[in-house]
Image 1 (spheres, rainbow, N blue to C red):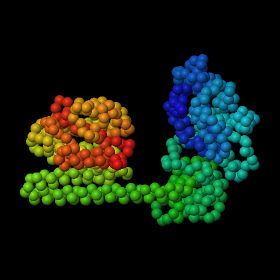
Image 2 (image 1 turned 45 degrees about the vertical axis):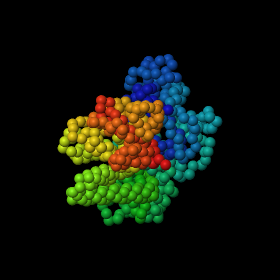
Image 3 (image 1 turned 90 degrees about the vertical axis):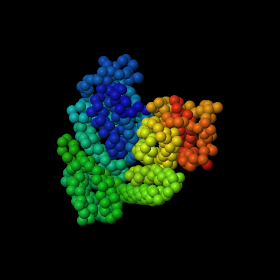
Image 4 (image 1 turned 120 degrees about the vertical axis):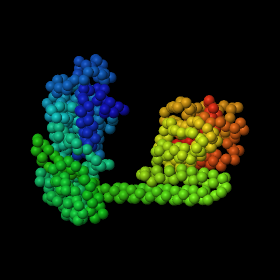
Length: 552
């Protein structure tokens, strides 16, 4: 289904500023639909007739943009948005967005456009088997009319309206007038809460002085939970709310102003353990402020849940921070022990342990600064690469580098991958590039999220070795294609290359055994050691991202 933006740009002469106004209107017109107990359909005029082909009514051709003139006859209308009420039955169960009609097929729309006024004349229509009352509201921005809202009320369940329904309808009428005068949506008034209160959550109507003329049962109940047991009608809402929330601590100065109906805004108030979200919409008709609508919603459970999550997140981050500190302490102790050893093999083993502990500490340090268990692994990879370069021997003149991006990874992938990357880099420096100049590159590519054949001269996702070539048991079968989202990492060097009899499974290298355990056993990935074209070695690590559980 085309979006509002697509329909406006493809079928109309409206400008980008007009489009932004319509977006603001549509983002907030659920309020009008609920107050009206009616469906809303937004129609905008098609391009000028002289810019449209003869069959444009059916296919919506493109034309030159021009100024909208409500005095001119438009060729037709296109429906760009639709909203159904949550407070009553719908008049149009079918989707009408994208529908194109000629001028004259919707008489009330033509009149509202031409005369720039709300049109309520006419008898109920019975086209779909139910009585529907139609009204048309011109949508105005400044001096320009952008389109017309068709408001359709299903009259099949009509009955004597209650005081709540009469208040809703009067408020809807005032909002419709504001739309026709270009006063709603209020410029710059964008709801900043995750979810603004709706009509059914609780509604209060204020007069010009900010006193409550009507409070819905839900609104009255919300204030009782805040600690106000009396009827709100006749009370100054701003003062009542300020008194309820007076805890002796600094309070927002604008609270009483906002809740008196003089400014459009959303606020949250808290009292006696209850939290309520309030939104004020001043009603300005004919240039005069006649009162305001205040929507309210009890968000106590939602906010307490948010606070619990924040506390949990803070606790998890603190745990990661302490784990990182403990790992750094262990690494420091291992370094002290290594300095005291006189046996070179023992000192080298402890140095390797320090590097392994350090790679895990880097992951926990990153996790201690993130609100969730997702990590931008590029930073970790760069630090691991730098750490490998720093501990290389002076005779090895190699500057490792990274090509491509690892992207964001879950912690359960990041920790073993950081350790495996540390081992592979160290193995390349100690065996492939020992006492020589050379290049060492880490190439990363997320397979399944865009294809990259080659980066920096290294095949990121090349063909796996065919039968007869060197291959490990973890490589795919010939012609096998990887499926799903995968992270493919290549550690490539131009060193001495692999021994003729090399076999990763039978290798007695502890580092390679660790890598195989982490990649194959823990991450369910695949590992391949192969000669690099032009000399050297490539190690390909292929890790699935759709399922992070270890293989069983």
